[in-house]
Image 1 (cartoon, helix red, strand yellow):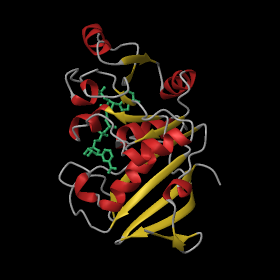
Image 2 (tube, helix red, strand yellow):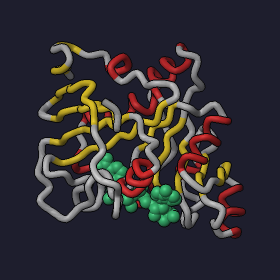
Image 3 (cartoon, helix red, strand yellow):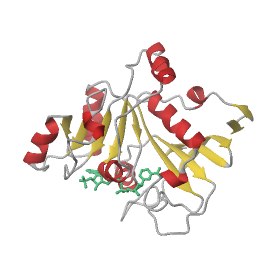
Image 4 (cartoon, protein in one colour):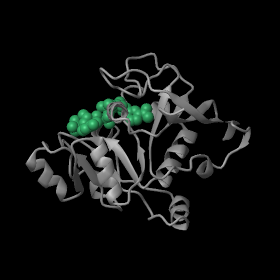
Length: 236
Ligand SMILES: NC(=O)c1ccc[n+]([C@@H]2O[C@H](COP(=O)([O-])OP(=O)(O)OC[C@H]3O[C@@H](n4cnc5c(N)ncnc54)[C@H](OP(=O)(O)O)[C@@H]3O)[C@@H](O)[C@H]2O)c1
């Protein structure tokens, strides 16, 4: 992989993606015509270099936040970091792996899912005060439930646990709600060299949103036709 901007040449991904602390970063892959999924999932948009960046961003984070829709559709499993990424974390004073935090209002999540049962670090579920009690009790067996009335409240409750470098892996509706609360600091966007040419959500779904949000370009990397764009969000 090579850097095109701000300087052309080889790139150290851990340095290029060093995460601000505190910071809320969102990571997506998109087709060139703006689709966040191909045949309903993101995998067809990805490639080896995108998967590498995906893993590096995980290694840099204190917590990985994902919407329940994405966890269900993409069949999320337990977080597994390669040995060299665990070593990197250890050398930087971080625990071996970040917990997964699934965002769900309905709590329609299977407690027997591998993302809960096979996790090395106890997962979190971020939910609201109206979540149904039976599902709450069932999930409490396999995860810590964090209850907040808004994403800003979840962020504050995660910070109380020392989880301040947040990586959000989508999906579009969760990203839309984070933008609505003006909580996003950074967007890492892989632009896949493909036209999806089908009905699909964009990366940020926010019906009735308050209009455009400005992005500031931080870097552009390239590998095999894939572009890796790192932006600041809503700041000049
Ligand atoms: N291209 C990519 O990088 C990428 C990344 C992620 C996902 N995707 C694609 O996106 C599609 C899924 O889209 P999606 O918009 O449904 O995914 P999503 O945002 O992950 O899931 C939406 C669900 O998450 C929960 N949720 C989201 N925001 C919430 C909030 N503020 N408060 C409470 N709960 C909240 C709700 O779960 P409950 O219904 O349980 O209450 C909601 O139904 C799939 O096709 C997936 O492949 C693509």
